[in-house]
Length: 202
Image 1: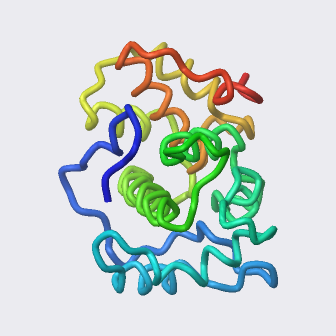
Image 2: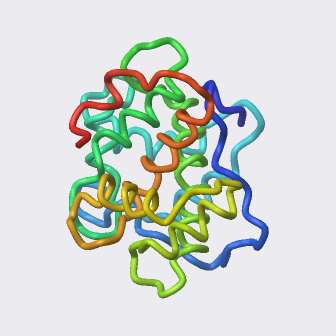
């Protein structure tokens, strides 16, 4: 599915990720009982241009049954692997990329693109999380961004860690890694970051 955004899709990595790895993006709770594997199975069933296989998943996320998944609904459904709320700025960024009609959320067809976008980043994150800690430290971040074609100073990497490390651990979680890369992509393109993406950012 094409990304309806002026920004690049996640950079391709040279080595394929472990296909058996399942990141717990969706929480296994009474509110959201489906698993990543279940969604993967449904995605495989999708026909071009259709997202009927994800209807059940979308209905669980779409709490108010409006037919549009808002950023708050998506945030409640997502887990960054640390049992803390998914970065709301990251969620707003992703919603903005796929919300073609500026309706403040994504419909069921657009949600299929959102899911693929997140799982693409999941695979990239897993590839560069060398120690399988669930976080990316400064050295791992440098390896990842160098692999994407960035040439940055060590001090700049320290600045990135400081800015996007919301938990003050000297490393970044999955959701903050996505946001870091999105901001770098936007900066590289010379575009102005939408104001709604900056809310809550340091």
